[in-house]
Length: 122
Ligand SMILES: [Zn+2]
Image 1: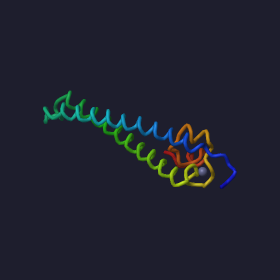
Image 2 (image 1 turned 30 degrees about the horizontal axis):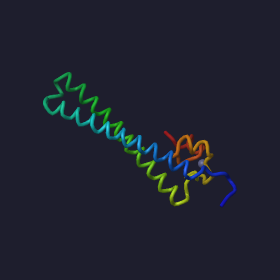
Image 3 (image 1 turned 30 degrees about the vertical axis):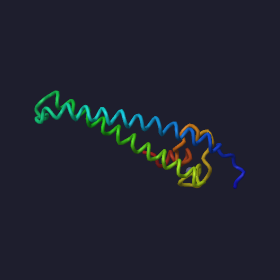
Image 4 (image 1 turned 180 degrees about the horizontal axis):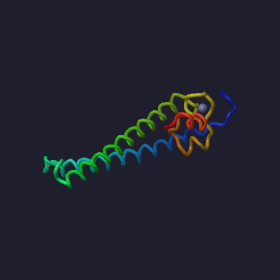
């Protein structure tokens, strides 16, 4: 093991679990919203020509996008949890350096150091 200080695994694990729980409730809420919007549009099959239907269709798209983002986020968190268990958590995916403790605690699912993230994030 390197001498570089690692965040305490228990602290990271609880940060990951906390985030995952929050994300799961968010996914739940978004799925409910989406179901409500689907019911709202089910009554008006002709939503192309119904101004309200068009608004609902747009809203439904927005909620679907948020839901996709939340689902991806949950997958990231679960992936981080797996890496934590496997013992290769906290290494930058690109350059292999140890990601600083503060960064990991602030963003427990992060997979790259700040330098590499700045290069590869859209
Ligand atoms: Zn890096």
